[in-house]
Amino acid sequence: MSKKLASTAAVAGAVAVAVSAMVTMGITTNGAQAANIKCYGISKAGKNDCAAGPGTTCAGTSKVDYQGNAWSFVDAANCESVSVTTMDGKKLMGSASALKRNMPS
Image 1 (tube, rainbow, N blue to C red):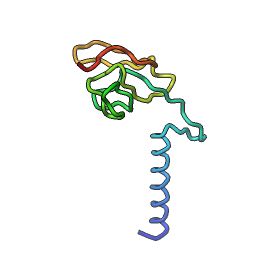
Image 2: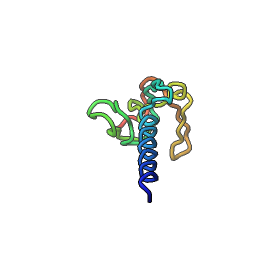
Image 3: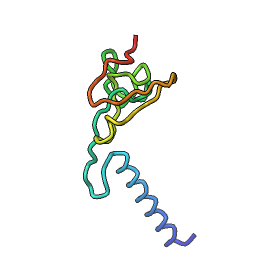
Image 4: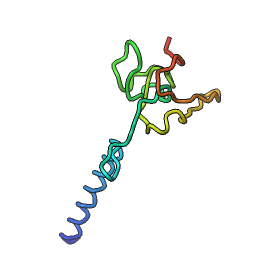
């Protein structure tokens, strides 16, 4: 591989990593921060971004699937339209505020 090709590949790789990080952080290509909000009741047990109620520390500490007081970040326009389906086929909707459902015993 020539030095020029290797250099081009390295730059392309660095750009791909930077764009991936921007997407992960919710930054749009024009530099604006995407509007993300806390959406309650949509995360699987142990997969929440934070706030899983008393006795928990933060991210990844929810005890049950779709725990009502545990949230995950989603695009602000999508939270109320996010739905999850439980194992028994019940459809649950996300909420911009904490819910009193699926609380651990």
